[in-house]
Image 1 (spheres, rainbow, N blue to C red):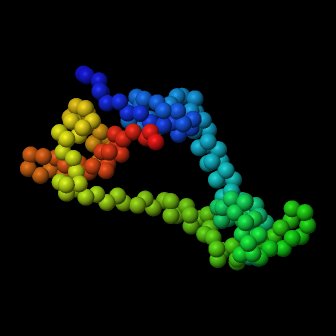
Image 2: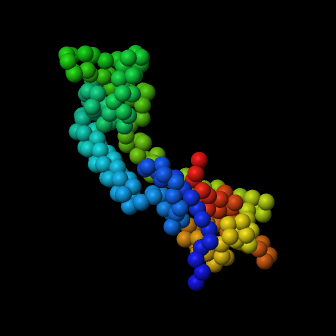
Length: 187
């Protein structure tokens, strides 16, 4: 079986180094960068769990909350909360050193809660494709443009669930999806 003659270069998402991909879904230049990305992902998940736990422990009847609790409930950064306080958009009470309390109603009127943000993330937006011939490549066009075998194109279409449409003897695949699949991420 012949190998792929396609050379795709991408920019590593961790170190920024340009590398030649070995698989179509490669995002990192080395195992080291892959491990760094995995560690960052795990740390972000732990932080999210910790903040969700803290947010669930804050009673809903409290009128004033601390900055940490505001970060946990509303899913914003601490600096953003302080910026809102400095600009006067949120009423606050300074009860001593490191004891700032924020008016919960002011924050609720400005920000969405962490639960609402999670609900929005869970709903994937459906992709809309134009499968008209002028917005699509034929399989042979893809083979010529990217210098790859037609069986490889078909394997990628199936693997990545790319929609296709057959009109007569030609099978059309959206240009946008194919270009995104085989594009080079070099800036």
